[in-house]
Image (cartoon, rainbow, N blue to C red; front, side, top):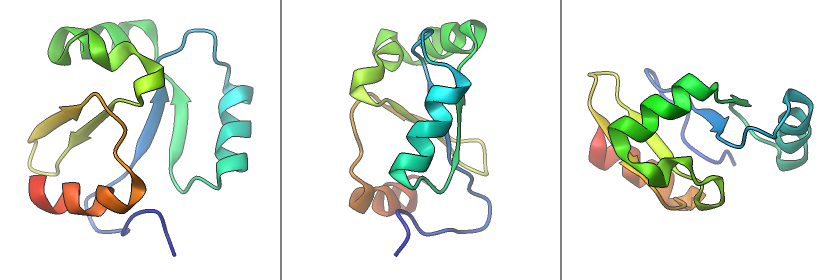
Length: 95
C-alpha cells in the first residue's frame, strides 16, 4: 500500500526548512522512511517566500507544514501534520 494515491497531476516534494539539514541527512531520512516522493533542502529564498505567503508557521519544521499546489493553481497550506491516511482526503477536498 502506498502512502498516498498516485494520480495524474500530482507530485509530492518534501522540503526541509531546517538550514542545518544536508542532502545526505534527507537522503537517509527518505531511505529510512521508505518515502515515495522527492525530498530536498529548501533554499533560504524559498523558505522566505513561503513565510511571506503563508506565515511564520511554515518555517517550523517540527510542525511538518504542508503546502498543496493543485494542478489548476489553487494553493492551500497547513501548518500541522497531515496523517498519511488523511492525505488522500485532503487532495480530494482541495483539488
